[in-house]
Image (cartoon, rainbow, N blue to C red; front, side, top):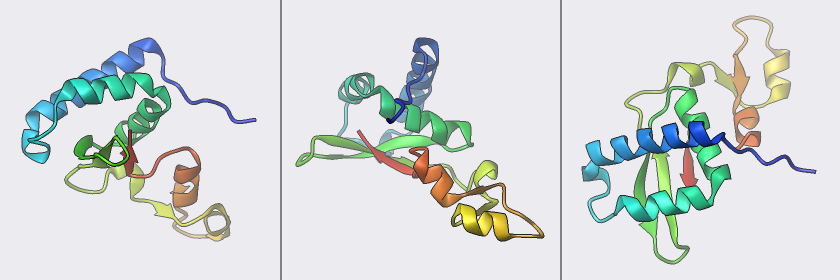
Length: 123
């Protein structure tokens, strides 16, 4: 049984405000796109908001960069200028993480992916 990952109404509103501000500030990334369509898709897909929030919470700066007409999806990338601090100490999977004796990473890439976090997202 899978558990849906959904933000609270308040957290969703806060995140949408952050995303809209970033969208407007960086319009050069998406000159052809209109925020209202993006906003509607995000509100209709709360699990996507959860994933974007994971990017944001780990120091990233998710922003929409494209729209795929064939799939009717907006494409988000993490547009932070450098690797966020929370994602610098990462190894590939849990097995490698557990095998490290010194300088053990804080997390694994597979662990992030299993929680729905990828560094990019389509909505």
